[in-house]
Image 1 (cartoon, one colour):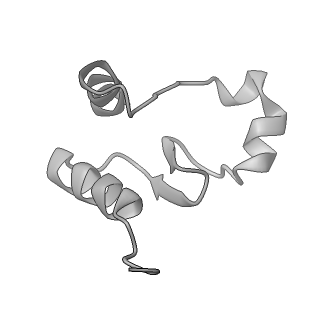
Image 2: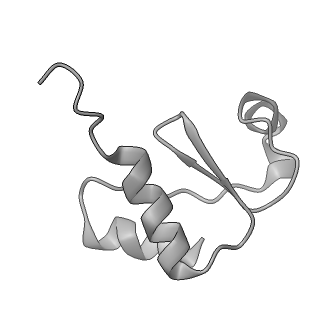
Length: 71
């Protein structure tokens, strides 16, 4: 969670929010949260658990990398 917030501070292309699951049951259901932390990238990629920084950054970059389709 801290790394996501650090990334958001450094880049206008990143937004990070931390929510209390018990206070937002509709978001728990929407994002199928069964454990915490759960990181959602662009509504399509989910990262579960506390990952090492290098793994977290690599996973986020892979999630936002253009697919190359249509080129």
